Length: 422
Image 1: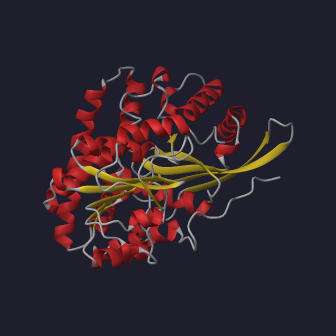
Image 2: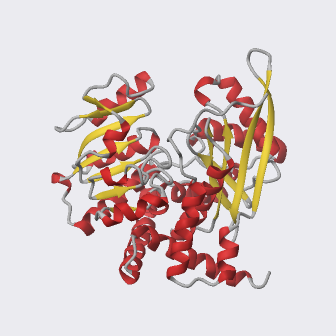
Image 3: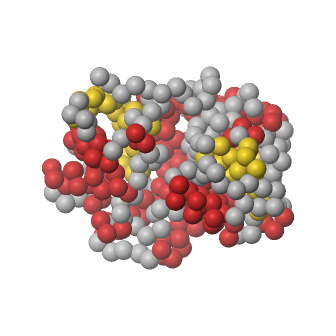
């Protein structure tokens, strides 16, 4: 019996892959990208579907469906996380893999893009069940994964724990191979700075965007939807920069305080209780949080939380996409028409994959950096990418999102040329 999928979290949920392709085509049209490049870049190289029979704690066997999409290896081995969620499907994984291709190209990493996922609800599975599922998934993909071919990482519903299981299972088959996966625990060859890396990149992108818009930290307000690893770290780091965070939320709802949320207490509450439910502040819905009158909105939860149905309600001046695909393509023109500036996901949340790259490098070299060294190496990469995207946005008169796609696809086109005829 296959794991039943729960209803999609967003009513009439738009296709993430359709959003990806709509933006790709808009950017390609703007620069008159040759059809050869369009064809190569737009089509995933490999789509793998696996079925995992796993014995549960009660003695029954359940078959879980898993995916791994290798979108591109033009720029190097494919790189991308593994997601555990009840709504994971092939369309979503294809989109996430494509975004990884563009993200890695945009920030100049020697990687292509990939993504994986298993359709399950990790909250209702025991630790032993999750370990058996993860190891079964690794065995099924043992000929796909590899430190020179395809390198997984954590994503929604997974963490260093699952990466440790993948590393261990893969190493049982092929021998000690720490570079096969990133996001590992520190004592297994993980990198310092990896856990906060995505949130740190969101903070840096926010500060760079604020400079361009003339927003001052001491007078700017922020709302953050999603308080997992990315959202909570972004909240703490933005709070450190002097911004006032007046709303945060998770899947149980939002918490609003116009005088400012105590972020440290919110993190403590989350660690103690598992959710933000019951935390201080006025209770609001996630939908209400998106419509708050704030300077900066950070959607750091799921795809498609801002669509054409609610985009007109957004009052923020700046959206910084902590999540992948939180704004659907049919909402872009509404937000742009209302003067909302968006720092897109493939730029704003690239801190995680940059530090993953440094973890992979450290594993290959057997030499490890301090957290300060990691940030000193990461900041110039993200800042330079931001500056290039902003310059392209001004050159073509397009949104930052389309500018980011243009930058990424131009690098990919060069990579295709350097591969030669095929």
